[in-house]
Image 1 (cartoon, rainbow, N blue to C red):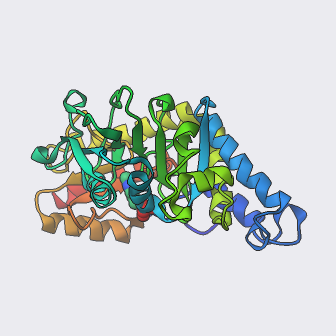
Image 2: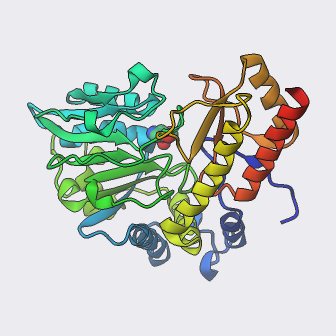
Length: 363
Ligand SMILES: *Cc1c(COP(=O)(O)O)cnc(C)c1O
């Protein structure tokens, strides 16, 4: 691969491992000597189905093969899960309890309000969402059908260090921006979900991993395609799945295995985030971390400079050097480096060298 790769810090869709792209390229036209691309074959054929099942098995295996869990491949992004969760789980007289930690939690909460009833279990709005609410402050409603958390707030750059214990109420996690970035005990959760385009693969597929008892039966008064049971009973082949995206997810999962699984990627991710936060903290206030210590994300590193003007100049100079995606989300401004699994340590080294150089020459 001779062409220069961008230093890609996009928040999503985001960087994919170069090895994965190269393998996909090698089998793009002729998949496993079938004489066609995987995109051109039936999703009911043995070749595609083997990839589909392999991806499910790899996911569960990375999580230590938890007992009684099933993987679903759905469409419509994590945003569709915001609606499906309340539609499927909230019965009459119940609500969904939501931990309000930032922009994505708020979107999930608003859909539950529309589709059943929503309750705020805790909030860090008083801190402008620059911290995850204290776990001890989280209180699900008595009539909660579930407790919903957003494990990593992609826009604000915050992340749960540990997850709350929800007792007998099923815990549901939006893990779109940090799934497979670190080890945690999936058994605490009834259901987790993630749009693939941040840490799992390309856009187009949403991964759901759930306890079978939660998804085997769904209300019959909601549209068939929006019932978890439809996808559970049909092994996510009720309708045509996003086959190429699922194939790519399978390749990314293989790659994660080669990195030493969750423990391996976590250790790399902590080194990467540590390097970047140390650079920010060691800049005598030239760069300022946005998220509170203890809630800092190892996936989305948000920071600011003295003025919006300085930030603009920083982004402009960075783009000239081949850095992509360093502008903060339009709703919060500032700067953000998204350093998902596929972003190599070396690229962060190049970024911090640039940050130090910029500070010395512009400061
Ligand atoms: C990106 C993101 C979403 C939205 O995902 P879509 O797949 O675009 O619907 C939801 N939650 C979090 C935490 C995200 O980062």
